[in-house]
Length: 217
Image 1 (spheres, helix red, strand yellow):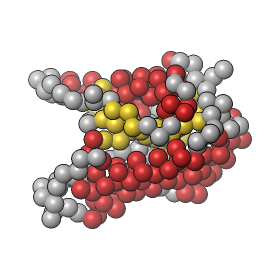
Image 2 (spheres, one colour; image 1 turned 180 degrees about the vertical axis):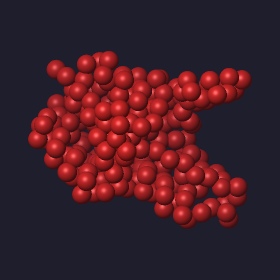
Image 3 (cartoon, helix red, strand yellow; image 1 turned 120 degrees about the vertical axis):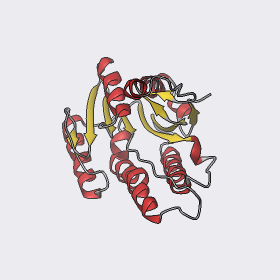
Image 4 (tube, rainbow, N blue to C red; image 1 turned 30 degrees about the horizontal axis):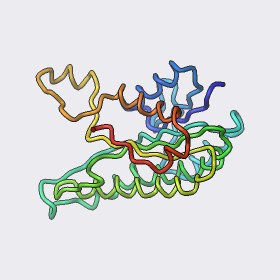
C-alpha cells in the first residue's frame, strides 16, 4: 500500500532528493515549502494556524500520515562567541525549532493513526559539539533534537517512531560542479540522505524510536 509522506522544506536540494526518492518508491508525497512551486504546497510553517489547516487538509484527503520528514533548515555563524547575534538566534529559532514544533503538534494525531509511521529530522554534529562560532545554530539544533525526542516518548507503544539523522553538512551535484576541486570530506550527499530516510521504514518502530543515527560514521 502506498504510504502518505509529508516532506517539509522541499525547496532545498535535500528536500527535492527526498521527494524524488519517495516518489520512485511509489509513495504519495505531500510536498511543502514556504514559497510553493514544483508541485509543493505553499505554507508558512512558522504560522501555527496555517500548519493546523494543512493537517486538517491532509487528514481529510488521506486519513493518516505515514511519514513526516522535516527538512526546514538554515545557518548563521559568527567570528567569535561575543559577536554572536541574537537576531540570528531569533531567525534560527523560527526556522529550526518553531516550524518543527508547529508541524509535530499538528500532525501527531495523524501519525498515530498510521500502521507504520515515522517522523524524521536532520540534525548536525554541532548540536552535540557546539563551538564558539556557531552558538546560535548549535543551540537551535539541540533544541530541535530535544523536541523530537519528546515526540519519540509520546509515540512509545504505537506503530510510529520519531528519529534524528545526524550529519556534518550536506553536499549535492550543484556544489560539486561549482567547486570541482573541493573534496567535501565528511559531507553527506543528499541522495544518500534520502536513502537513509526511507530506510527507517525497514526497521521496527521500537528500534528506531528516539534514536540519533549518525550518517557521518
